[in-house]
Length: 143
Image (cartoon, rainbow, N blue to C red; front, side, top):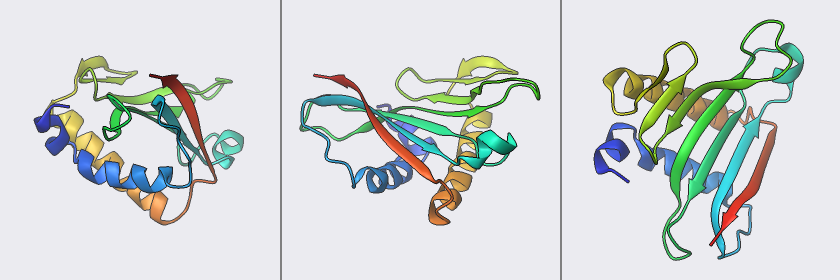
């Protein structure tokens, strides 16, 4: 991963958090990519609150550390929408960012970095306060 991206987005700090979240799981060595999903079930009833999050991690081989491929959060796009859609998408592997109102842009822009740092602070707070009530780890691909 690009060292500027890693530094500018404080991904070492994020990796530490994710490693703690992955500790309870026994991930076989042949797994290349996983998806970690965090949710607060009341979000779906109330249509507000802490948005669901998906983090996908990937490793080059079983001896290499996990790296963040992307982070996405989801929200209801309109008050009448029945399903959630992507509201923020930070793609670290291909270095782009998506938000519905601006569409897609380069990841390494100051305003995207600032948004991510704010998001990371909120995410860290939610984790420390044990606000997510559902956490799942899903295998996405194998070597």
